[in-house]
Length: 213
Length: 191
Image (cartoon, rainbow over all chains, first blue to last red; front, side):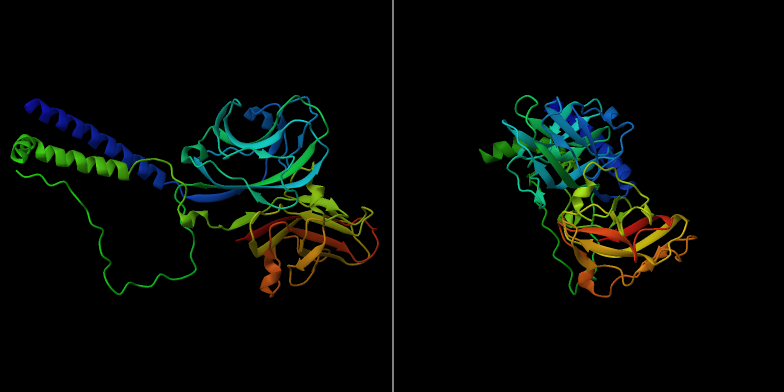
């Protein structure tokens, strides 16, 4: 029985340490202001998702996805962030679509590392760019797994155009994107004044295990 | 039987309670990433400073293949009477809160009026609403400091719907001519 108490005490001590580390991390995060951003600009890169593809390239509003560029994958690289961001929403609008491609041509939202390695898929399912509506904004459904929506520092978000077969045809799609991301917990500004409560709110009930001594 | 269980648990009761409380606290502070609260997903204010200059066309397709820029290029001798600085579209309805501009450079002259107006256009470039209260004369506007653009007093004129886009419209009252060259930058705050 004594050894059991020692084990429990040791576990408690370890948990205490973990708890203190968590508080420390929370305090560090609190020093960084919470932000909400909307990303609309990026750089189109054919065949290369590495961050170095951004070098010397100007940003653009409209991505350029074409099926006859000798590559199966074209990437629209959104800017990297020095702070962890969480994707809140994603929308796209096909401004122009011409030509055709005999196999599938899909759009997915993905998170890559600086070397261009796929880390996570942020979109729930690929969008078929040959049948998607043109001219109006559409939501790009996001993964239901929260962890998939994280963009850590040293990672960045990409809208990836991928061909189901080899490069061919003359499909030419020009979409734009609107990605809303947040860093930290953002509280929305409110124009209304919260009324002062007239009575003390009922505190939440706390249940603890009861053990007879 | 229950008494026996209690007897066995008794010596470890307090440490066990402590352990459970610590576990509860640890979970409450866990760093599991969460999507922002409902409040966090609401639209926040943004400042727009980048766009694309387009000579003669306000259609959104003119953005294709063009890089964004912070400085617009309005010149009176470009064979067109209208030049547009097109801001990116938005997927959600926005309200224009304020507009400012700063003329970085102005050289040359134009014999007639050269005005600037902020407008909302449809995707094909058709004028939908005029955002600014009155046109700004770009030949007389100060170049020394930021200029605040007066906004329409009609609230509906300040609403930017999905599929529409904001433009800064440089208009020559007469045919192209002269050598007026105005390079302004903008700051548009939307909510």
